[in-house]
Length: 69
Image 1: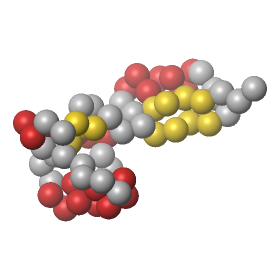
Image 2: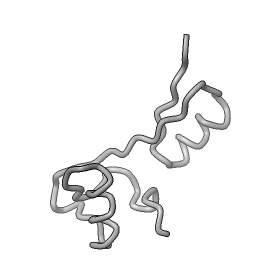
Image 3: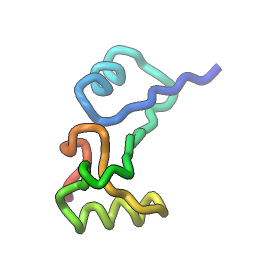
Image 4: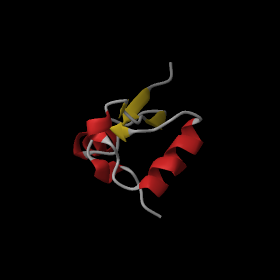
């Protein structure tokens, strides 16, 4: 049997990844269509949309989980 950790990038996910080893760690982005949660950086929003293949408005997680590079 294979085990999977679904991780969002926050503190709790980091704790899970460090303390509960799994065969796979999968990054899961919790997104929303609520315009009140609009991610502030339009360029990053577009980059995420392009990678997802669908419009990205924002996340229900802390905005800091989106990596700026």
